[in-house]
Image (cartoon, rainbow, N blue to C red; front, side, top):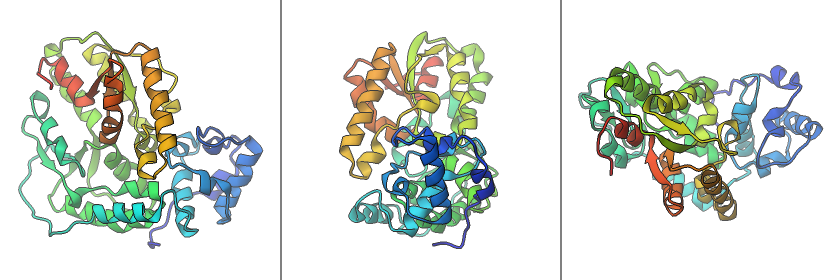
Length: 339
């Protein structure tokens, strides 16, 4: 395990009266006394059924009313005890997949600089009025590596993340706009929680989009659509930026339908569960999500995370709900063509 130490306040946790971190979990069924007993076991480094049944949805980070880091603690305890959320071959494959295989080549970039993380296929989205003059970074050298928390391998994230930050810093970037929600969560939440310095300012692309739309507010044609928003698991780590979803929707004239599985009650898209080999759970949450959108009368589903889009776009299309990335619906409001 890396020498980096998680900033977890045991006193805060033990003085908690709600224990919402476990009590509100959508994948575990516990009462308050059980939640209290199990979190104490986890703090002391003892075994707990929570470590074995955690599906790594990140939600307990948001549910903690003291700003502590219960999820980060859970995954560290899982690794210490070699409790695996996925089969070892799958974990090994994922760890090898994102390892850079060649030296970083430095090139000139001009701000605003957009990080696409490990999703070069999203290069096509960085176009039009909203991204005029923007530069991009993408590839393994800029991969945030937070995904390894889903595999109880936070040591991999701790080992690789400083190098990723160094790679970005070598470009002289003062502000980095993160297109991948998980990248922003890494720099704004996880890195500070484990004592990794981030010398640049991470900006979530929602904030960027909102500011750019405000600059062109007179060009916006209200869309008049009813939309569902598929909130990704990584948004649990940085809920303070969620207001930009509604800010953008109001600006472009769309109605966010009321859903059972939205906001703090959102469900995962199922991508992580498939990665872990838990297909039954994945299919179950996907069905709940899609039926929820249909019942709410959504005409479109707005996605944030690439994995959410890959996982659910075809399923919502089959129910006559148009899948749109947040960038795409913003471009539509500016009269730009979106395929």
